[in-house]
Length: 234
Image (cartoon, rainbow, N blue to C red; front, side, top):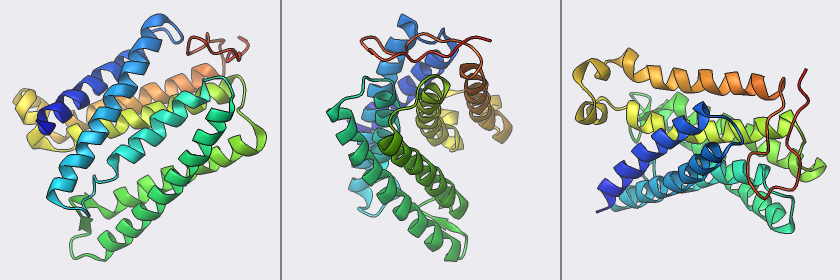
């Protein structure tokens, strides 16, 4: 039962994430699709970890749920009201990020020293890429704990890129493997350029909105957030 749930959650996460990126930010559709995206990502990550544990306790996806929970969790706390619960969550998240970064660095070294440069089906540079992103994200967490949650554009940018990176994990896990794509989409969509296109569009949308949030006023992203998250329009 785990595999169908995993596939359904992953597909739903991709659809909901794309919807949240494309609609008006701060509106009801954005809020609801974003929260549903978080739930779908957590289910996808949990089932991925359980499926990997059944195959091997040292598999590459064993800690998938922790990485996904880290990115979507810190993205949500960024636009929630500041509280003692949020501070404790950020401390726990920082510990998770540093632990995952260490594991990815170790995996990257092992993959680099292997004959083909792969470990658990992933190339060495992917491990180093994930470790770099996690270290940068952890540095952002330290800055939050020292100086507080930023206001305006920087706050929105933190929320945005972390949600987008979680979506990248979901989209990348699907589109990176041709056999998975071939089971759902027609043959023309299984070529390498077509499978790379959704990832490129995702990053294009992310950078577009990162530019937008620093130039225009956007409404509060989550209902019940008492802290203003808007920037002044020029």
